[in-house]
Image 1: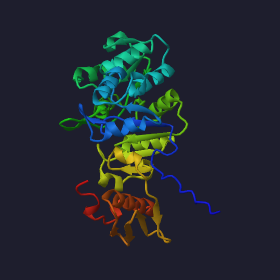
Image 2: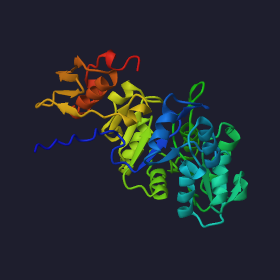
Image 3: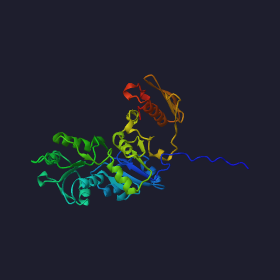
Image 4: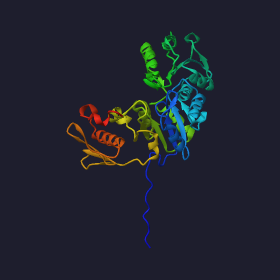
Length: 343
């Protein structure tokens, strides 16, 4: 009797994953609107695994974020959302006693979490705060940054109070385009006081630790759109990372990613979470990489397309594989524009 050979199940980015952790801006939405295919793809994932959401945006509460996600069609409650203010307050609790007065530079999302953490909120450096916590709000102005600066300068005894920032994203995607993020505001205070804050959000590990602990994740997968915060942070936390090209970083930035900021998976959009992820096959000498028929090689300083394959995303995956494996900086290579223009 002949036995049929068992065909292995195709491997997708979700294979073996118990919790999906998704960034929001640039992954799920841009401004108020959902990114194409994101909602249906994440709802499909939620049929078999836990889905949680991580955001560096400190201007909104977890409830308001969950309400927004629900309006977009995601099945979400507040406890599914991990915010950088939540991670920042956990760090704050390690720095100052419970019940301390804290100077809050930020919006409702940050104020709410500081109060939930058992601290007293002040908006003035004249109230002798025990620490400063800073997060993004579109309403912040010079006066708010000045209060932070006044509080963070050493007192007469030379003592400096702790300073915690929810995140240091340089930019934030909004409906009209790319706008300055919390990193620009933190930088303004940094220049004024001459020191750096403790940071809770991506790319630091604190927000990932908060999420993994809350969701009891054993084999999480993180999805982000930025190499310098999302992917770097996930790599630091030891979590496999997906880069989806619907937000800040596109093909050109991906090709140039440094060793600490490289994702395990590269997707055009979140539909590809559920599609087989093709294997990368290197030539014996490592000079070329092939992904589903798309082949890219390096000859001298030239990156060359040998075969187009069956899709532009596989061509990008092959190009990234061979460039990253070469150990050579991108500025030392001649990369054809066809690998990144229009993507």
